[in-house]
Image 1 (cartoon, rainbow, N blue to C red):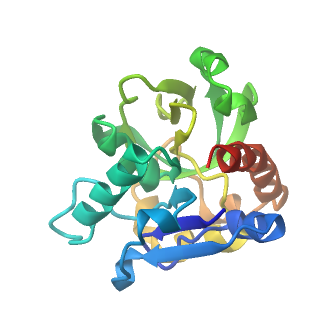
Image 2: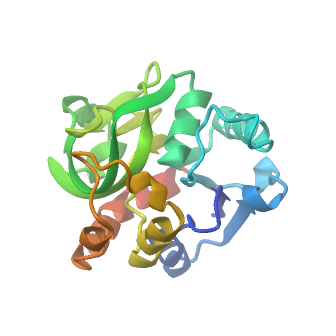
Length: 232
């Protein structure tokens, strides 16, 4: 199974998903949208992973490739393939599924708990989520839950943290794939996001203070990747 990912910024790559795919023997291909890479043929996509990025889904005028990306995701969905959207990727998936994306009341940057939503019990794909989990966030926008999708998680700072549609389409506002290097890349490239301070904005030194957080996040992600791979 080919894992293809869409990358929006050089400092937001696959993270721990890369090591998982390599260990499982799944070939990895990529479209670096920021570098002008062409989108693949649908036949060259098994599981599609749509990564995060500092841009917003409604900034098509600033990012000429974004319209083409949305249409490509739409085609992947229509073809019955599995899709995992992470942060911006989740917002793009929500948009393609007809939901609204807009500014959240709070910015969430750093490690904060999410809580599994009651509806998550209706989705087999959502079984990777425990009742509560500390996960990594870096976002200022949020999304409505697409029609027909299951709302799977929320947090104190953001009500809609994730959804599952048709068991094969998963949008996560948070980052389970993040590695220490990935967090450092976000800190180095998005320092303006720390200002002004907020109730859900951690300091850089606090974000990087505990290596175990990255390992725990990856362990949460592994069963989800396995389920999506089986569907792909």
